[in-house]
Picture 1 (cartoon, chains in turn purple, red):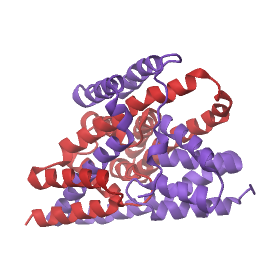
Picture 2: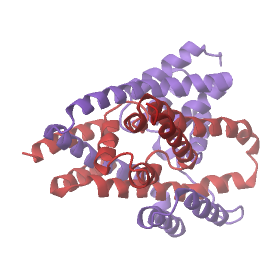
Picture 3: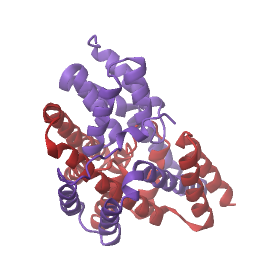
Amino acid sequence: MNEPSFARIAGVFFKIGATSFGGGVVAYLRGAIVEQEKWLDDDGFLRVLELSQTLPGLNAVNVAVLTGDELRGWRGAAVAATSLLVPGLALVTLLSFLWGSLQGSAWVTTALAGAAAAAVGLIVATTIQIGRRQLTDPLDLALVVATAVAVGGFGVDLGWVVLGVGGLSILLHRPGSGRRSSERASSRVTPA
Amino acid sequence: MMDEIPKALSLLAAFSMLSVLAVGGGSAVLPEMHKIVVLQHEWLGAQQFKEIYSLGQVAPGPNMTMVAVIGESVAGPFGWLAAVLGFFLPSSLLALAVNRFWHRLESWQWRESIEAGLAPLAIGLMASGAWLLAKLAVEGRVGLLVATFTTGILILYKINPLWLILAGVAAGLLGAF
């Protein structure tokens, strides 16, 4: 693999940041990184994706950080993640100024209410798709429900939930427990 | 201006914490973000929080760039910067650090345990994000219809979610009149 220039890395991630919509960013990333640029092969990308899902933070941003790091070290990571985020940050900021000047308009309120309702559907669908395995395994499902109820029902601080449920869950999936394959990454890299 | 800097610093602290706790991505920390921004500090109203999240849905690129708008609304340009750096930098630094040694742990038995163990936590947190947003955002029969329709279509068909967000906008406009 030839070492790509920082400009090339910036260009590729900027383009994805500007043209991918609605949570499908990882699929676009795979297309560019594996198929067009051939920066990683399928296994390399899967490894990056699995680690991205395990780590906190946005999947797409983590994929950019890890891929950039593989290509050109920490500077590559910084260039990739920044380039991926800049178009969306610029556009959402611009939209917010428009929104600010239109605030109070019934049209804007109802339009955004419609977008919000659709966004609920998007999160629900993504949760079901990524969590197919966790939602069908009794023990995993119990952990999912415990997490959701602690946060959503009782308002337990997120830090305690991550430490408590996360720690307990890792112990329950300990080596030798026979409950270790997560099978998450492979299910969601197909482009929308 | 003078009171914006302390606010921006609190934002930086709060969003940095959210960043490293965001197992399961952006929607996983929505309830905690709502708690901090709307309930504890009362920096924004629930309606504003909801509308900013909705704005973020029509922007391209990774989800959650809307944290910039939250920051800007709370504390101007300093707030913008604090929210963006706070939300995206700590998790990225952590990813970079972990990437340095995760390779070498290929044969470490607990590696898979951590991956499999954090999965249900991530799904549970995402579900709590959906729950919060549903409470805030699903209003009346039209809202329920739009949310259900969107879920169904996305599960059954591979379609760019942006079209469904725009369909939601259209339904909102039509339903209102």
